[in-house]
Image 1 (cartoon, helix red, strand yellow):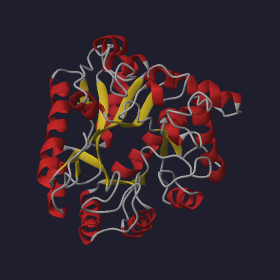
Image 2 (tube, rainbow, N blue to C red):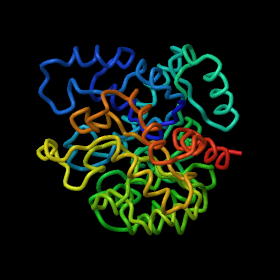
Image 3 (tube, one colour):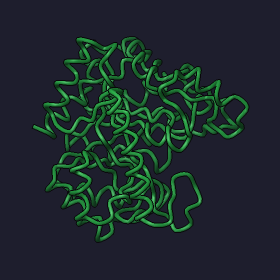
Image 4 (cartoon, helix red, strand yellow):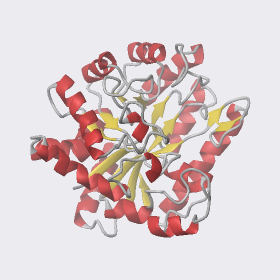
Length: 351
């Protein structure tokens, strides 16, 4: 079944992990044999696997945080450096596009045309991607958003982990900054989509109140099932439903089962059934399947050691429809969750 995945850090995966994503997952694992860093040799995503998994479109990210200490693969000491790194990630997507391996989708007409081509020739059509930014530090100021729009950026999350120049994110508390309020206004004027994923609660509620444009959550799970501020409360989910948002379920194991860690993994067995639980929880709140989707975040800094046990590569997203059928979901609703809800969302956002 055709898949639209609303969160893949493809460029970050290639550049920060120095992976040739033209190779199969098995070939990348073999190339990383003997490496001891977590996530090495356990990757799940590559361009061949995306094609095998019928992932026709994804939201592909640029990700670079401005943190004074600059002490991780994500963190850079200034916004200027973060901006340059994100532009480098964009350059990788442009290289893929130049080689006929990916296609940047900037509007509804492009998305519809791409899907028509994919359905007619899935073996040769490139991966379609909508450019997204996870944490807005690479936008140097609110008036810089227009330059990113010209570059093709269409979806923006204001923060990642910790505070950004614009908002507070996961594992921090606080609201929007003055620049964050101005950035939301600039985004609304440009037609950008707000990604509510990772926003601390105060920032979340302020952003939804101030921003009147389209809102989504690219990769976020449910706090009722897994406690912690990385997940949404039912009240947050309800607020997003009222905005006709779509929420992509993430496949990171610690977001799928309470208490899961690398140390408890042998006792707490996470499978794709846990993914179905997350989807079903949102469907029960909504009373419909129109707000659920897949935002896998696979290879977002981890591999199979931190993914559901019955997932070897991203191809195994194709196991999700059968799990939903067992729960009584109709075929039309399953197709909506796998791709149709994102089509409806972007039709509304872009037409």
